[in-house]
Amino acid sequence: MTIRKGQDWGSPFVMPSDCMVVASDADAARSETQAPFYVSNGDLHEALGKPRQPNAGEECQLLPIDAMQYTIQNSDGVELSAFAISSITIGRWYRGAFFVLSNSGFHQSRHLLPRAHPNDGFLDLLSLRSSMPLRQRLLFKRKSRISAHLPHPDIRVERLDSFSFTRTKAHESLIIDGIEIGSWSSISVTVRPDYWHTVV
Image 1 (cartoon, rainbow, N blue to C red):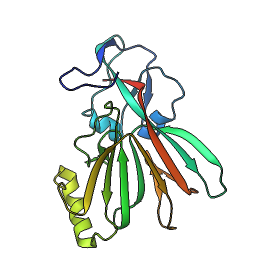
Image 2: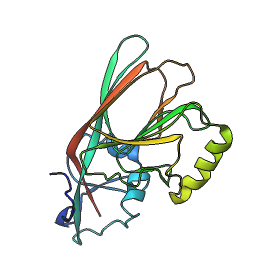
Image 3: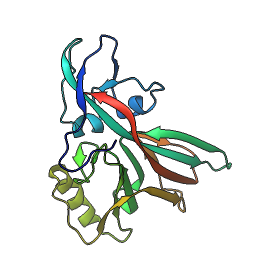
Image 4: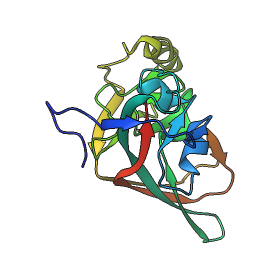
């Protein structure tokens, strides 16, 4: 069950001796098991407050984490479906339209979407207008380090149940949990609540 306002997140847990430890958001998303894991780095780790790894047998918290389930169609029409745990970005922050679809609220250690929560059942989207001047983009880049980039007339923030995008320009990159996708023509994303569990 996704987190509700005023309710505690997660449940008491005892750290197992065989708990899987993953070193990045991408490694966590590639996990093929539903067993609890501890993530030691990345944006999800940042969103959780950079917790230390509990010792085996130690009391800790078990937290449900939503997944972003995506389907990519490549330039040959072949579809690929998988899961993301933290962020999906389209474009580059320094030119054109730029989109950050986030589960954790963090992107490259910047708290871009303060309302986002890893277990709220929503996709949170930040977008920069294609007409946003470079000077304003540089200001956005600097201010986002301390989450002071909002509000701004050229920055839009939304909460969504689903998201889809069709590539129109060759320079529109697609990066999922820090991994760039080489060949793509479109992407669609939905939320899978409570898909993973992590320990803190």
